[in-house]
Length: 227
Image (tube, one colour):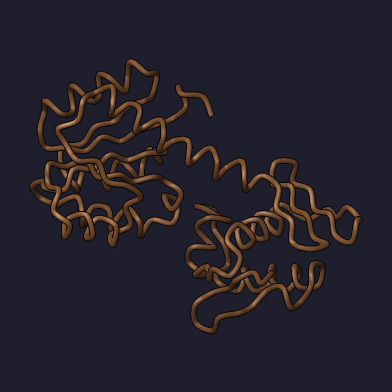
């Protein structure tokens, strides 16, 4: 992903921080969005889907911890990197941040150039994760997510788009239970669907083609892929 396509949401109630940090990130070529409190951050994150969120902890209306928790509840933002930028260096504050779903923690004051370097390092994680997930291999099953191609027992298979995207989602994190509502949101998005039964039908078809034992139903919750 090119820099000009990377969106960074900067959240802080101090105008000077927004101006200085935003200026330096803009100079690096990133798209920078700003918010002055947690409520604004949650709305902007949902609307613009940033790759990285830099979030202050102490803010009016909604603090950074609560904002992080709200953002992490949005399935479409599950891959977004969140780092806290705050003057509070106490252990309990850091732990609260990580418990809320943050990926990292930056203590201010911090020099702009150092912050930019930190941002680049955080975004490399995103690049590495994306590269790792391009091709997935599970025994005799190979999934090429970039080419929408499946190879099973050395034979190429063609899956309908939704079946492929469902398989791709479940295999992205083997063993993780994906909730039904998350599956609907991430595979079908805003499209009108019949309901949860739609997932069941697609899972049944995948079981027939990939193997029944590869997909486990967690009653009342959702599904997971078993290696």
